[in-house]
Length: 147
Length: 93
Length: 116
Image (tube, rainbow over all chains, first blue to last red; front, side, top):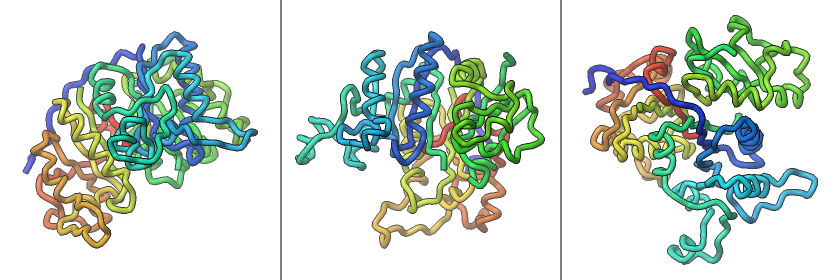
């Protein structure tokens, strides 16, 4: 039995660099929209965003097959344009993505699937990318579903 | 702008179990930023230091709640960036 | 850098808790200090005697038993939630420390995060 709480050391994080973790899916939560508005404001304030990490249901944001009605904001497209224009890495967690049917070319071949649907510039990678953000002192902000 | 110890970002409505968890975790020197569904709390929140409780303007406006919050407690996305960058820690509930 | 991952979703009915566990195990795998806190309906992860065969899922009990081995520093359970769900020491998995979710606890960590 662990008899007491482990001792923790507190180190304040510098907050010039942000990592955004999006766990809420587009069109079932407001998370991708809030995160995009935040990201634009952060760059306008001369902050850096080192990566955007999609986790859980958030991976649906990286789908190239999303086709909302033309009078609605196309969130997948808006995010992909934003990341490309600002040279920000977009990473979809591989375990979340594969479970939910979000695959790139190489995963398609590996699992002999009939199609791939990962929208550029998103890439598929492991949770190690998120750990890297945590360990290197980025301010990691989470955008979860709101209900 | 005041420096916050922990900024709590709350995007859940008051009925959500995580809303109550968040309120339990707010300590002295902390701040609360209501976003998305979380702004519905402005109709009933009381007892939180008004200098340290904020709501996101876009979400208030969308829900017809702008008039319920004083302008110095309403923040834009620029303000949200400032709050998240200057706080010592941030928890997204 | 120390991280507290909070699980407040009950087991088997959603994947959020499993994905929270993956986050904790990943941090531990990279030698980053991490603890898990179960609160709300999430404390039901910690009940002894789970058998998920008939819901065709992997039992979480075994995963959690391995948490200390993988380097997760502490499995914490919120006292009020344990009371609410009838979880006493006898019903709880081994290696669980009962605590209270509040500012004293969250203030001890550099990062506090949910999986979703």
